Amino acid sequence: MALARLDENDQYDQIDPNWDLVANLEAKQDSEAMLKCIDKLPTDQREAIFWVHYQEEGLEVVAKHLECPVGTVKSRLFNARLKLRDCMSRWRKGGRNV
Amino acid sequence: MSEANTERQRFAQLLPFYVNQTLTAPERDWIEVYLRNHPEAQQQLQFERLLHETTQQTASSVPESQRLAKLLDALQQARPKPAWYTRWLGIDLAQPGQAKGYRVSLGAPAFAALVLVVLGQGLWLGIMPSAPENEQTVYRGASLPCQPAAQLRVTFKPDAKSADMMLLLRSVAATVAAGPSETGDLWLLLPKGASAEKVLAELRSNPLIEDAMQVNPPKQTPDCK
Picture (cartoon, rainbow over the protein chains, first blue to last red):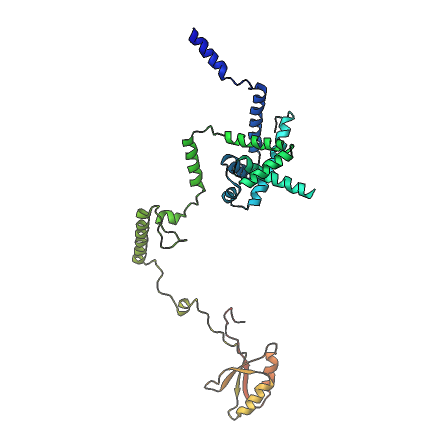
């Protein structure tokens, strides 16, 4: 009995008091929306995002992988971000049809 | 204004690499100073972090073995297919002297044997091309030299002097194409546009000429105009 109570207390101790259900849900939804938005990007921009954010490579390395100048990598990332922001803002406005 | 734009542009360019932590120390410091001075840029940073985290959480639901098999298939399909002769004979015409390892051991000897059989049977049955029928066939590829097309044949009288003959020919603008023959005949060429009948009449009326007649020019090759 005492052991059971101890376990119960431990479980409560593990829960983060700052954990916010709504914020967490929103973050998860944002993440899903972001994935959908990334899928809609042109291939060259998706490739740039893959190397920068998934492989976590530096600018020169990404340029080498993509076989293009560093300026092109920068512009692809810039244009990708513009499209993603647009896509995400439409989703947040209640569209869900990004 | 322009400086602010440049700073904003630099911030936008460096931000992805700030988030993935590949910036150099001075660049990272610059970004942090910029963020302190521009609180509104925090929103961009949050957006970039969301993008980074989302990308990092991306995981395929397909097992790795299946993904590798799919990738291998895609690579094999993307590889250019060898030509039929390369597959069967192992000979790559693009790289002569290098046999490909497709079906070298079977294809090449089989093809050689087939060629030998066909040639042998052809010779035996006499269906192979025999000796050429005439000289023209042999030298079909060589073009014949162009022959000047003589238009007139004239026979001078035996007592005509060569100087008189030359003067006469010059007066009608004729040139000697061939001759003289055993009987003293000359074949003459006329300039382009000259009337053969007119020259013939002029020559016939000359006392030095015994006989003059028009001849058919020999058949020329298509190259000779």
